[in-house]
Length: 332
Image (cartoon, rainbow, N blue to C red; front, side):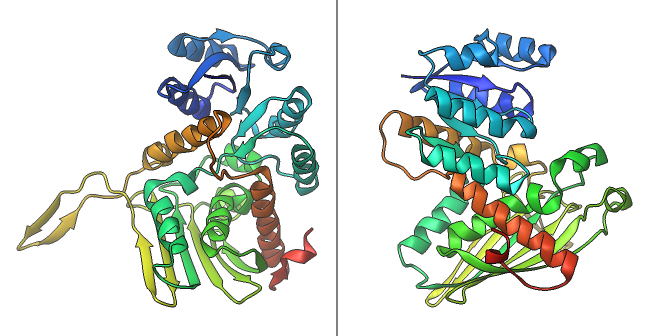
């Protein structure tokens, strides 16, 4: 059985910590959070001891760590895991600095640890099935991918100030999905962005509405539509067009009941929050990590996948700033 330690007892740490308890192939043996109320509450709920980060890395009986702490701690914690031979499951991003991410990726590649970046959307049942059907050749060669990703409401400006901005924080998931579905590396990025939802976001130097176009070397195209506001709920849709047909994945609604009356046809709204929408994806991604630690053969999102998505984010930012298409090779 894999023995894991949790670093970070906030909202996402709660999710992953509780999902370890549901997995019969793993045991959560310790957690650490510098904010003591969070650490006390979650350690009691999960029935595990509290340890310092130093104690966790020094404990030879702990096989791996779950990095769910503040973004600015991720890179250092991954490097400590490399140094102590512990496997890593890390929430995105590795870091907001591309050079720093590249340093970490190089160290991970030179090590023997298993390191997974938690791009949870790859593990959503519908999105994963769509990718499997693409790989099976159902729609022939992929030609176009359309990704729609809109939050129900903007986050507080305090979050915007530390998030790295829309492209590094929100669109980063969509950049990864585009790579996942296209099956080829993206070579060119063109982006347009505005602040239409919350003036305070613009005052903080960020945008809240964006359209991004991506192109691979062979000419495959992907488009991403982002907004920090969708009044009807959390809007998460995919469409993939190929030479033999098309696959789509629609929103997951609050329930499946549909009403047909003289007044019209009505359905439930999409699930409102990402924690609800991707509940199963969070369980599946962690289960995948644990299964690989137990010897299973599976492909996990790597630290390099995180680096590649950040490259695309940086290209999108430059595209908006300079009003032109940007070759990814310009970035790094």
